[in-house]
Amino acid sequence: RGGGMLAGIAAYVKRVRPDVKVIGVEADDAAGMTSSLRAGSVVTLDKVGLFADGAAVRTVGSETFRVCSTLVDDMVTVTTDQICAAIKLAYNDARVVLEPAGALGVAGMKKYTESHGIEGKTLVAITSGANMDFDRMRFVSERADDSEKMIKVSIPEKSGAFRALYNLIWPRNVTEFSYRFNSTSPVANVILSFQPVPKHPADFSDVMAELTSQGYDAQDLSDNELAKAHARHLAGGRAEAADERLFRFEFPESPGALRRFLTALDVKWNVSLFHYRNHGDDFGRVLVGVQVPRTEEDGRAVEKFLGGLKEDGFKYMEETDNPVYKDFLL
Image (cartoon, rainbow, N blue to C red; front, top):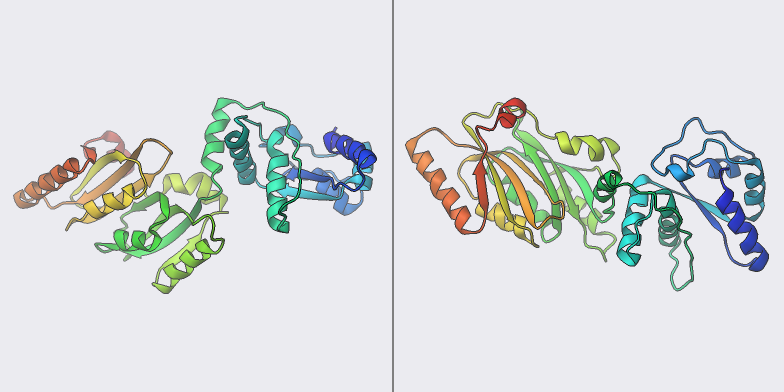
């Protein structure tokens, strides 16, 4: 019952090598042992999260609590995203796919070493369990990239605003860009995800400071569950965008590919919708709405513009007559 593995390992390790620290790890939404050790007695949680279901119990065992309270040196709790990142880390390092509960040790070790600045020491993470179904992998892959930061940025509704914002993020890799024209407001709210420079811990803070200094209203959404689980997929919706035409573009995914596309998207018309998400595929996919007056001159200009994009390697398909567009975006 709850805490059995931790109690058993602690009992053995402290008997053989009492100088070795034993640190337990729990999901932060199922931290029964952590709560009990802090309280000095067994605590029953009101509810537990089930992502790491192999280690989710509301009440830990009385005997395991007794052993852990005597022999365990510390406890660490980790988030769902940190567990997902640990699953990815284990796969990249050893080509094994751990279940969430099995990856708790790796997630806890990574968090503990980073928070305590530990280097040059020997650490052992216990990994057990590979009860992972393919459907859950979809969620894990979406949340595993701990190098990605999600922000909301308010930009002016005017031509060139996209490019100006992107140039402030460049050369960092932008992995998500979602925007929909708002006819009732002079500003647009954009959801943008990017990867800060890995070896510069303050890089994300520097980007946010630069955005603020340039007059942008920027907010960090990296820990906002509503934004990550729902809003990023719903950003946009219907808009009163007169004479809007919708295009779906594809281009080979490579560093700087999105920047080249934005540079090529140098049009005199208003961009009323923009959606991009890097899913790790070979091809980047962008959905773009453009407000084009229904004149012969503008019609010819659009065809010339699209022909130029095609020559530059950007395949496209017009989706203006797609019923999904009419049902959900107009």
